[in-house]
Length: 423
Image (cartoon, rainbow, N blue to C red; front, side):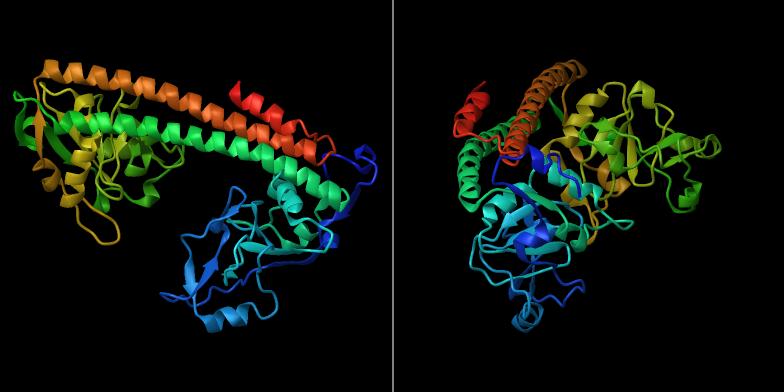
């Protein structure tokens, strides 16, 4: 396994060793899925390790008897490292609680030797160069996995224990400020999105006195259901021809085509009644209820999928306004209450057509749509800024880690990090 630095570039006293040489144990969890119980011992998987932490949430339980059997030789203990190897690759976290638990095969358990600071090793495993190494070492088809034997041969640039502790202390101080800045920026990102959703919901909750209330099929538009049953089969799908619009293709207020799942011109010709036209409103009828988007000029001629409805708005209805209305929380909640199905929610044509909505005049629709679009543009601008800030902060962390494992880290690093955060 190759590092980004060789031993000749390291400070005096540093060594390069294989991971297996600095650990007492590197092994994965149980491969066979055990029998789960309603309450018992936590059974953790790769999804429980993220951003350098063990996430004590969203896990299954196993019986105490099963736990004792699974951990009789290799029991996870406080101070050990969990390292993801299936699904999520190359995420490391230290077990920081005295909690009894077992692990699934998607996690690797690492126990460090005396003289190796576990926090130093955790930071190293989470560095960009090792994450790339982990990604490039994945074997197997499908989900793939990071082989434990491969991990054992990862090379580690290793300073004396006192230097390991000095490096970790500097990293802890620098990352505390960076992580706080990331958390604040993520909160701002969430707030910007919630502000837009709140404004959208307020419009359709505090409707004006002049708004008319009737069924969608009476004042909104005529509802059509996409082809279903024997009209369209999976065998009809081809690549890179005419896109199909199913709920999975509706993201926020946009239609995102999947060119691996299209149909030929002959199929479209046979299904003329389901061809989408500009300003139609496509609505998902199963799964996440409330997904909808307006068909743009470049999307006219695409085919409504079997999982969608399409609405042809009446002349006095602005299609963008109607889409905003159906996407608002107040109407999504109404649609969900009308849907059926235990495993996957389904909405019927009749239920959507009979949905009671409130509509203002066309001029008022246009005025509201313009205000919504202006706020959406500003929200998207802020979201872009926040995402760029988060990306820059994560790059700063990786830059500091790179210095840490090449012997270039100084006591001024936290101060420099604070200056970059404030810039």
